[in-house]
Image 1 (cartoon, rainbow, N blue to C red):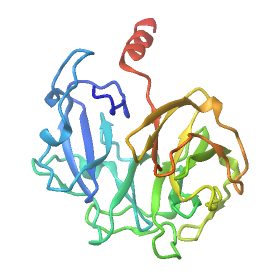
Image 2 (image 1 turned 90 degrees about the horizontal axis):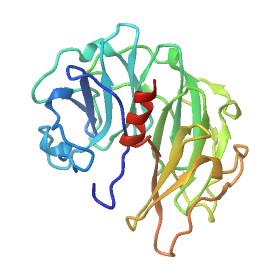
Image 3 (image 1 turned 90 degrees about the vertical axis):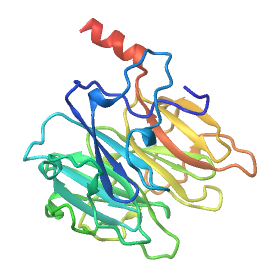
Length: 282
């Protein structure tokens, strides 16, 4: 693995399971697990662009492993401009070699997040202005693949954009800003609202903090990776981050040079060796 790379997703799958690969342009591509190159722990693997017929400038944002296309599960989409959509998982049960449209996107919009929900969960959208909205999944009616979706979060200022989608489960909400500040917040701090509103403050986007660049749902024993514009990766335990209320600025997560900015955060999955040890002990 390259020095600037790290494990973002790690899951156990059978050879005939399917990976649904969603792209920034709202398309979905299928890969069977047996189509992936099999290699040892020390191998770098192959870039996903070499495995899928992606167009120029198109990149994969989310990979979802699927065993069964259950009728009672849904794929939830979120776009940069605040649109949200829910489509039955069963609508993606027939693979096409060149991929298909999963979401009808406006030319100036982009898919930023995809998740699988049970039909009875809450959805959260986070915007660069530091606001977030939490609403019931039931507020979004199921739609077909070619539908454009409905408004999930209303953006009121030019330049604001949705930067994260969370399908709520148990855990804490981690938010991080461009200038390297962030915090943990209890999920109950975010009130349940109707879909399409402006949301509430998730973190203050002050001059000190800069804009909100990432939001994740994490557990106290997780680790996170902080990614800067200079290409620096810093791995840190969630337990080292302070738990604070919504309407606060947070604390420093990473010390940045004057010209550097935090551009993203990811929850770091258990590495392959540890995962193997865990399975062997079961």
